[in-house]
Length: 310
Image 1 (cartoon, rainbow, N blue to C red):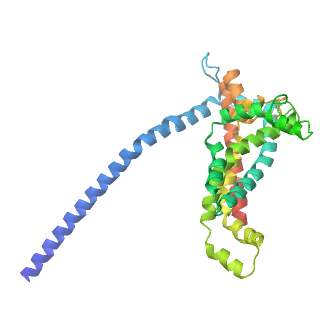
Image 2 (image 1 turned 120 degrees about the horizontal axis):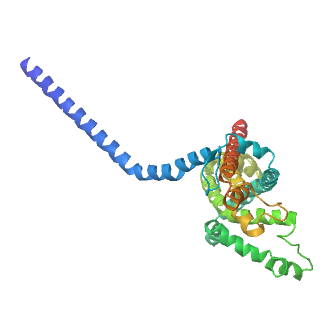
Image 3 (image 1 turned 90 degrees about the vertical axis):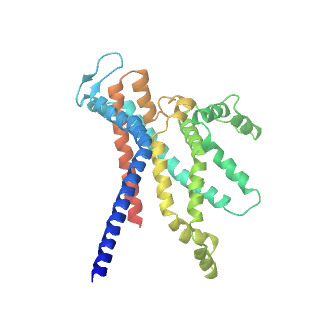
């Protein structure tokens, strides 16, 4: 009996010692984790949380950088209702989104399907399609500014060889909007192609093998296997594309300066001119806040539509 009690006492001591060591190790791991994420958390607070909080505060004030900040309550938001240019920019971005988002999904998915085929030299095409994504939007827009020039641009020169007189791409409303959409597509399609490639790699080959055994054509496999299996990927791509469309700035600024007659002026461009050219920081912050809410609304609608299909 004494021997058994002694064994129980020793076992309890060992268990307590092991629990104490495990607890100490967990505390050490927790401290190490907090220490490692601290720099990133600090940068996130400094460059994200504080600016967002400042923008929300400034949206209720009148501030022109030079004078002192004056609290005006909801006055900036009342001005938004009668701001004609703001509503024009919303209309422009709406038109842009209607064409840009479907084209982005169709082109990036088509390219992803093509470059996942085991053709010789397909890696070169993957690189070529992806290269614009890592190019500066401003630098790319400057190149396209030359290509689309009505008098000496390369595109109109090529069209003239086949007897077509090219339009003034950046000086007429419809061609100017089409040019902004085309350049934005060219810049973004490579990144979304990579996302679709990852989605295609995740589809089990057994599904296609079973479909081929049942006599399904390539088009039927695309409709009944590829599209449904890529629905989460399409949700991601469409959400990011809608957000990107609402935030377009560089292309409109470099290519058209928002013209002609504000026909290509975007919301972010209008916020920029209000804040940094007219020095109405408070009003620009109110516009930015409305844009943020618009992005949230469109994102939620996109999620709801895709969830309803599930």
